Length: 187
Image (tube, rainbow, N blue to C red; front, side, top):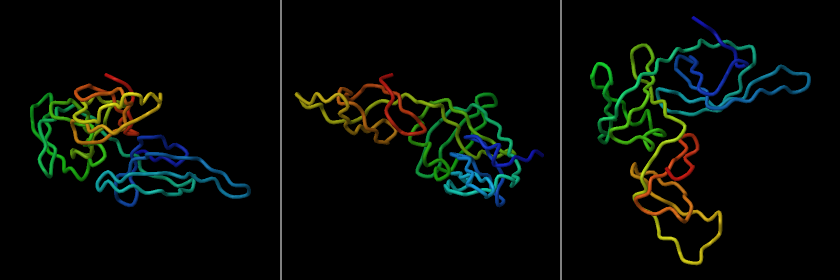
């Protein structure tokens, strides 16, 4: 059993806090004159998806949670679950959609993704930095609209909406940043 202090935090670290697993999304070390150092963090509950901003004393200790990642293929989704298949054993699993609300917009049927497992239970998805998605709907560019940074909304094949440059058309594949949800480039 390994313990970590907030001084050891990094993006993606999973800790046990108040009986739940929390993933560090952001952190900032702060020291104010004549007081103890502390760490401002944004953490996500991996069970409920709740995101909190917390201030931890730099000397607090937390149990580090060891998360196993395993590649699995997305089979399909229904109104409540995402269904996956283990690429090695061909065993099928399901994840409630409410646990992966942020990630589900970047996952499509047939994708191979890494699944996070803690003590034998699936607790979430580990997405790559960018994903390739097809534009399903966007407005046509207006002739004469030549501003270099002009953006328009585009609905992608998974249902999410991303702002894209005006030259992007329906049917094109684009790369989307999974952390920010922003357009990166054409695929």
